[in-house]
Length: 246
Ligand SMILES: *Cc1c(COP(=O)(O)O)cnc(C)c1O
Image (cartoon, rainbow, N blue to C red; front, top):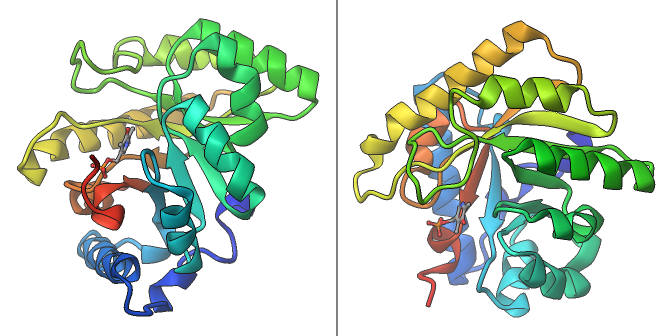
């Protein structure tokens, strides 16, 4: 997936033109750099996904101008509206749950789908990707905290799902995604992030075809520093970049 996160990665750390977004970005970059240093990781291994749900195209264009290259949306309809104006100038991440009847649209727009969580969705992704003649890149979402309100395969169900997906011709698993339980205290997220990293390590030892563990998508505005310390390669940040959502 180098083509997604390649040469422009990190370029925005040098940009600051006095608007609030670039200032936010500069602060986030610094926080990521410090967290990476603490965990002896390279800052360049962490990509910021600006979560642009509820934001206007104008707001999004401002962060693109500041050097952001990756955008995350959680609903297909909203992704479509923004995609029609911004299109391939950004790399798009679908971070919300995906219904099987929206897979075709998802694959037309999203470069990486973070929310594969069930065999039926893998089957449909495989079918539609096959029609397109183009492999699809996905992360498996894991409900580490086991909350009813959260999507994702259970920790206990992960292996069976990965084995199922690994037999698909057109689906390429690139890693895992999780959301920590809501909390004002970032440290409460750490055990969930650590578990996700351990699950990725265990998965690597299985050496399943079509299953790579290059990415851990974890960490949001409140807890991305902890996520980076625990190995996140993709952090999904909304409010810390754009301000509070209405
Ligand atoms: C909204 C959202 C985010 C970003 O949340 P913030 O707290 O605004 O940073 C990250 N991941 C997912 C899946 C989301 O839906």
